[in-house]
Each structure stands twice: as C-alpha cells, then as structure tokens.
Image (cartoon, rainbow, N blue to C red):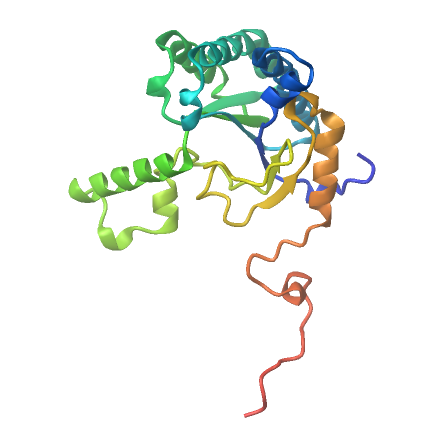
Length: 254
C-alpha cells in the first residue's frame, strides 16, 4: 500500500466477478467448486476494501441471464449466498458495513429474500462502508424500472415532466444515494460490461485482469487501485484544466 496515493483511492469500486467456472474446469472440478472458492475471494476483497476506507463496493453476483444456467447450478449459487450471509453478518455489524441489494429480487427464493431483508435491516445504520450486491440484476431492466417510476410520478402529478433531470431520474434507480463507480474491475480477461451498471458507468475507469475470480485476492485489488492512481480523470475537460493550468488559446485573435 506504500505505492498507493491515499488521496486518489477510489470512493466506489465495482467488480464483475468472472471466471469461477473456468477455474473449476482447469482443475477438473465441478463448477460449484469454483463458486465456493469465489466466496473466499469475496471475503478477502470486502475486508481489504473496509481496511482501505473504500466507501462503496459493488459486486455483480448474479445477473438476470444467469437464471438460464442449469437449475442445479442456480440452486447451488443461492445456497452459497445464504451461507455467506449467515457467516458474515456478524462481521458486517462489527465493522460497520451496510448491506444493499439491487436487482429484481422477486425471482429469488422466498427464504433467501427474507434472509436478505433481515441482513439489510440489521446493517442499515452502518456507515463505514456499503456492500452493494447485484442479484438477479440487469442494467437495462434497472433503467426501465426507473423510467416506469418516473412516468408514474408524472401521471400522479407528483412530478412535472419539465422538472425531470438527471438527479431526479437517478433517485428512481436501484443505486439511488450511491456515488457512481470510480473503478470497475473485471476478472478473467473479458472486456464486457455484461449489462452491469450501464447508466452509472458513464465515466468509470476500467481495469481488466486475466486473474480468474477464485484466485483474486488482496494483492490483485491493490494492483488495480495502483493502476487507478495513474489515471487522469478529465470528465470531458482538457488535461490542463484538470491540472489547474491555463493553456494558450487556440482561437485566433478577433
């Protein structure tokens, strides 16, 4: 951590946790073995982010399309999530971590829905860090939900169509109240967003690593943050503007 500038640590890190299946296949193990090992990576990354003072960690745990996987694999993933909550909830409370969930949760097993809600309620007053988990999630679906809620507010006359702004619209998103991700990490070497936070990542810095998620640990996270430190985030400005310099005007004299 000596080479990481504490003033340039990302406020919000999002991770697409990819490669569990390939990790298992490389070892001639069932896919569920990769998912189990991936849980250990989640534990390590959550703890590291808490230690470093990261405000928000968003994890893409289960996409809308993942429902199309074999039923036995989906069931195993739901069971792993349930076990993870049971084993980690006391640590969340102890370390001030608030749990948030985004996505279409109605498709989840009722018992898991209840367990998630209990964990959310138990940690809602925690302020040290937010662990935001995307479950049964689709970025496009999230945007459509927000559009419907916005339209409903207009129809109910609680909102004027002329008052709709980015800020108003963002309040209808699953991520309302959270800052946009500063850094996106995708493991396993794939270069895709996979429908994850597609509205929120307008200016997010991307970092892709060939490391498969079950092998991803603290050192890999630190490497990603070190790379983030080197990025110049301009948000549409020139480099000179970001650095506070006054470049010579390129416009001719009038």
